[in-house]
Structure formats: C-alpha cells, structure tokens
Amino acid sequence: MRFSLPPASVNLRLLIDVYPNTAAERDRWILSHRPARNMVDPRRPFAFKLEEERTETGEIVPVATIFLANRECPWRCLMCDLWRNTLTDPVPIGAIPAQIDSALSELHARGCESTADTTAVSGAHRFQYSGRGLRSAATPSRQVKLYNSGSFFDPRAIPLEDYAAIAERVRAFSRVIVECHPALVGGRCLRFRDLLAAGEQHHSSQPKLEVAMGLETAHPGVLEKLNKRMTLDDFQRAADYLRKNDIALRVFILVKPPFLAEGEALEWAHRSIDFAFDCGATVASLIPTRIGNGALEALAARGEFSPPKLASLETALDYGIGLRRGRVFADWWDLQQFSECSACFEARRRRLQEMNLNQVAMPAVDCDRCQSHGGRRHPV
Ligand code: SF4
Ligand SMILES: [Zn+2]
Image 1: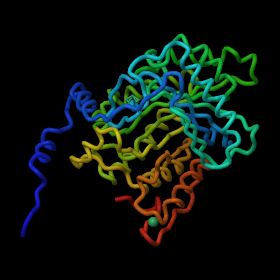
Image 2: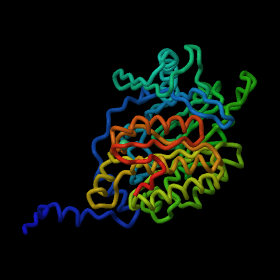
Image 3: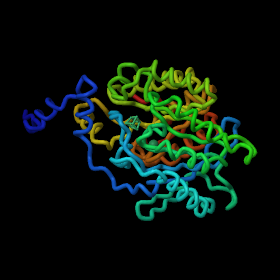
Image 4: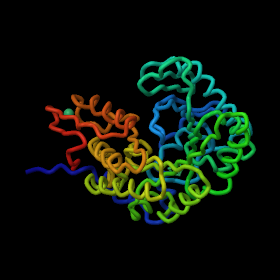
C-alpha cells in the first residue's frame, strides 16, 4: 500500500503557523495572514442598503443601513474582515456627514422604488435593497444603521466634531443604530444620545439610540482566543451602562467561532443568546462565521476552523426565537456558502427571512436530496 504524504514544506508551514498564545503575538499573526485591503473613498460610504426589520413593537419597517468609510478599527479580532473596507488614516471632519447625505439621497431616489432584491454598483458605491419590496415610492426609512466597520464612538474613526452634524441628519428616524466595542462605551454615547434628542421639538418623537456590540461568544476560552481583548464581565459592564442611560442594546453572536466543533458550537450559540438577553439585549443577531480574512483560512488549514452548517444557524434561530425574550435575527448575507444542497437552499433561505420578520417558528424544510430536516436535524 502506498501513502501519499503532503509535501514537507506544507507540513513545516503548518507546524510553525501555530496560533499564538499572547495577545501581542496574535495581533502580529492575524495581520500577517491578511489579504489586500479594498480601495475605499473617504468621501463616499462604501455601501448602503434598504432592508426590512421587525421592531420591538412588532411592526415591520424599512431600515436604511449605511456602511461608512472611515479609519480602521484598532482591534485585531481573529474572525474580523471588516478592515478590508476601511482606511488607514482618519477621515477629514465633514466627510462622515457627507457620506450620510450621499447615501440617504440615493436610497430615497432609488430604494423606495425597489420591489425585489436588487444590487447596484456605481464606482466604489454599492447600493442594495434586500427585502420583500417596499410598498410605495413614498415609504420612508424608519430606522437607520450607521455601521462603520469598527466603533462609532472611536474618535479616530468618527470625529467628535461631526457628532452634531450626524445627529442633525438622522434625527428624523425613530431609531439610530450604531456599533461599538464595549471598551469604548461611555460618555461619548451620552453626548451623541443627547444630540439626537436636541432637536426633539422639531420632530414628533425623540429618536432612540441603539448600540450594537459584538459579544461573539459566551465561551470564555474561545472569546479570549478571538483576540477581542474583552471579557464577559467587560461586556456586561458596557451593557449595564447602556441600559442605565436609556440606550438600547443589540448583540452580535458568532455561530460557530473557531476552535469549536459543530455540536459544541451550537450549544455555545444557545448560551450566547441567553447571555445576550441576560445583559438586556433587545436584539440578538446571529452571524455565521465566514472565511475570507486570511486568518480563518490559516486556522482551517490546521483543522481549527470550519464554517458552520446552515442547519446550525437554523437551529440557533429556532432556539432564540423560542425563548421569546427579544428579537433574534439570522444574518443571511451570502448564505449559500453554508449550504450543501442546492435543492433545498432557496426554501431554507426564505424560511430564515420569514422567521426574521415574523419572529415565530416555521416548519423545517424537508429535502429528499440531502435528507436534511432543516433546523430540526442536529447539525453534527
Ligand atoms: S472590534 Fe469589531 S471591527 Fe474591530 S476588529 Fe474586532 S470585530 Fe473587527
Ligand atoms: Zn437539501
């Protein structure tokens, strides 16, 4: 019998390419595996889209999501690929309000007429509508997400001098959602919250500020290895601060982070949803861990990471919605990469979308070809 061994150079590379134990070494290791950064224009948001989302009160409303171009986040999280659409230098004062103006005017002009999933690209500018079709050209976005591939309250990403101009532009929305690392949750959140409320007399109701924080996982050992430089206590403290200051909390949770097998990853996804609601979250957003930042490919080569199966995402969503403690959404961007069966994929994607919107369990999709039973099957 003949065995074919991988070339010695491959074995050697895997031997020396061990994921390090200290944070500083991890930073270097993660950076060393990065592919190239995309070209990003500081005068334009790098993307924006209209989508529909269920509110706390059960309405389904249009949401404008603007992906702001700004300086890269200072952390080096193992699973992060958001840096690919960031800049290495801070943006000038005025650039972020200008990006918001540009996205909102284009969304208004183009998005309100969309009736199906569409994506349009113009130069570095990407527009996407995702949803079931807005009902009329006059349908306004009710909520806005200002996502900046990092922390909104990082002053080197979003200049403090721009807070008032940003607040002025989004004050008419009922909810303003930004993202932030727990370490940067503090006085700047209150300053922005107060600026949103400052124009209250001109609008029928005060916009609610919501901060989205990445818990990633409630597994303490895996969280430490993700290199987010945050503990569960840090997360809880930031969540408490938001709650005491009347700021809503949205929590991002990774479905199957590195270092966990499919079954235990699902168990920890459930525990992470529990932890998010224990911290006062109004939304838990489930993100299947995606390959593509270089570091995860290196871990995959060592057998320390593989993307989740679609069934894991389905089961985690079933679990979270079943708790009835708050809204739970499954992220379905580029979902097909998690599917192993083209026969049932579309039906399963539609089921996730409908469950996101309606927040009620739906029958699992049966499939003769893959013998999957959707979220009911234990995804081992
Ligand atoms: S804190 Fe968020 S944006 Fe920054 S590196 Fe980590 S995951 Fe990426
Ligand atoms: Zn199938």
